[in-house]
Length: 132
Image (cartoon, rainbow, N blue to C red; front, side, top):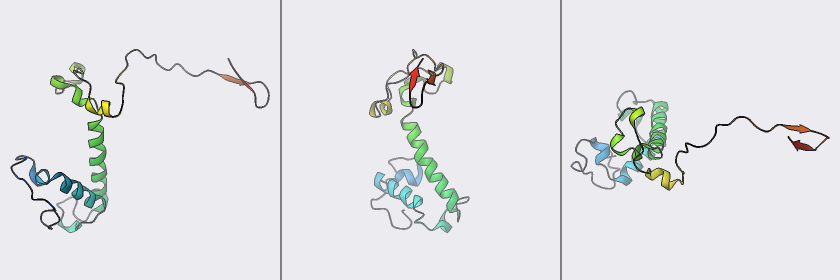
C-alpha cells in the first residue's frame, strides 16, 4: 500500500511501535490492503517468500485471517479477564464477552441434559404417523 502509493492516509509509525508497517496503516487502508490481496489486485512478484508468485497461498492466508479474526472475536476469550493466560483447566469467565452480547448468544448452560435420541414414529397407514 505504501510503496505503491495506494494508501489514502499517512501511516503512523509511532501509533503501534512494535506492530510493523501494516499496523501503522489507517484502518481503512488496512481494510483496502486485505481487499486487494483477496482480489489478487497486487504484483505477486513483489511479495516476500513463500507468497511470491503464489496466488493460491495468498488467497488461503487472506481467507484464514478473516476467519480466525471472526472466531477470536466471537469466542469467550475476552471474558476470561485475569485468567486468560492460565491453563484451560484454570480459566474462569469473569465477565460476559462482548461478541456474545452482540450476537445474542446466551452463554454456556451447564444444566442441559445430553441428547439421548429421538422419539420413534411408526407409520400406521399410508400417510399417517403416530408418535409413541
